[in-house]
Amino acid sequence: MTSRNVVLIILDTVRKDYFDKYAHRIRDRADVSIENGRAASSWSVPSHASILTGELPHVHGIHTHDRYFDNLSREQTFLSSLPDHIALGASANVFASATFGFDSVFDDYSDIAQHRRFPEGMDMERFIQTREREGLLRFWEFIDAARRTDHPLQSLANGITFKLDDLMLKLPLPKLTDDGAKLVKREALRKVEEHSEPFFLFTNFMDAHAPLKHLLGFDKSMHSAPYGWSSRDFEQWRVILDGIDEDNEADVQNHRELYACAIDYLDRQVSAFIDEVQQQTERETTFVITADHGENLGFEGDNGLFGHTNSLTEALLHVPFDIVNPPGDEEREISEYVSHLDLGS
Image 1 (cartoon, rainbow, N blue to C red):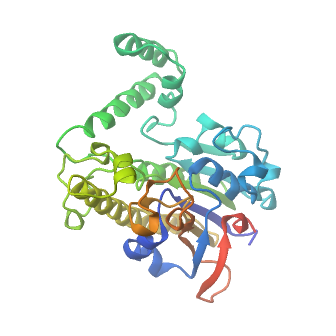
Image 2: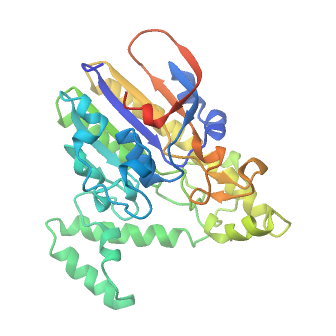
């Protein structure tokens, strides 16, 4: 294994049953399918730390009350068992970004998200968190901060796209840009091209994460939601407290259908990404596709819950876990329970 390239693909917020139904391209090309893969937590921060360390959140100490990875050393992660590999990463998840110190165990890492579509520019999430002013005062503060960076044009572009994405959620139009999938692919492929092999490459794709809205790249035949509808438009807590009724039934259906569309979109993007990486590399490359956690969608099996920070339901912990091009030629389906804590080994 040490002579192989390894690519870990995290499909953020993708539950196993929807993955099986809507990610048939990845499923069809998987040589090994772990049917009972389980995440160690129900949300990104502790789950990613558990993936890297093989420890539960109460042991590694990175969780809701301490969300930063700055004190995590490479020796504490499975990357220490790949000493000959350069560690690369590209993520659209703010919690798996430099904002929270996630990049510290990698050699070359890029953050791509609504707040940072241009990695060289300033981090909009960090800027917003450190400023108290509102309105025009914050705008001028941003202009001044962007001007002072090493990459002012990219910083300005990050600010513009950040506000544009927020505006598009409120307009009766499809979203023009995805939630980072294409940019994660671009950055990851650039790193593969620039660095020598063997490499370990981490990627996080956020497109199945709420808020959900129709994207120009979605298959419109898969949903009936109006172009202007966003999952921000209905109160999920009301569904959790009062159940699904005639006032929110259409919103719940729109949310579920757009979630399926997002997984179908990721399936197309990730399948193409696997092909592109294989075309660029000389060594054999193994791809591990999983999710940091799933998502509650208000079903009876979800205890009527929505989202992923309020429970430890089966929908949250049962995640995809497929391997493309592992060592050996045997195709197999593994029915035993396999935890993310075992992912490194």
